[in-house]
Length: 161
Image (cartoon, rainbow, N blue to C red; front, side, top):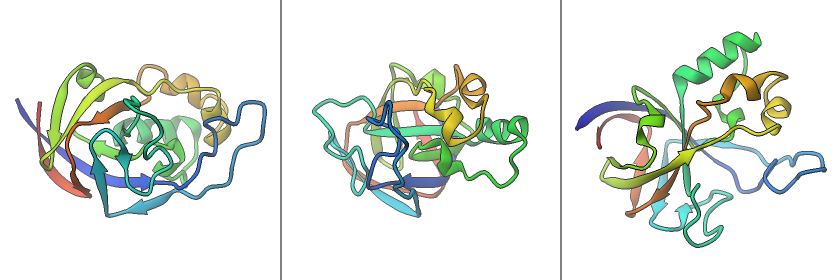
């Protein structure tokens, strides 16, 4: 099945602000909005904090729906909230991410496997605003493994599922 998806943003960060910070304040690593990123099979995104995190890591790349982000921003009453604040790598529209759990799919010639939903944790209330975690439950994005190498770019593309 072929669908069309728009990649609006690609975010990477060289360090963890929340992951591994339980009981501590969040880190201060900036999230960079890039036009292109190199996907490396089994390892992650070059330049990102989870690159080579561990063998078979389920979150080598994460996707998040722009539609959900827009609903979050509206519900939380935060007009100037950046999509990078959800700490997901790829912000897309036109794709039902939960439908990709347990499936292989291809974007721009790069193959991915949808492992599971990115379940929001308590840090979302810190990173965004109180209530964000509840609003994101069941639609927190998609954790994937990268199956083939290749670049991923911002733009409109076909997705093969």
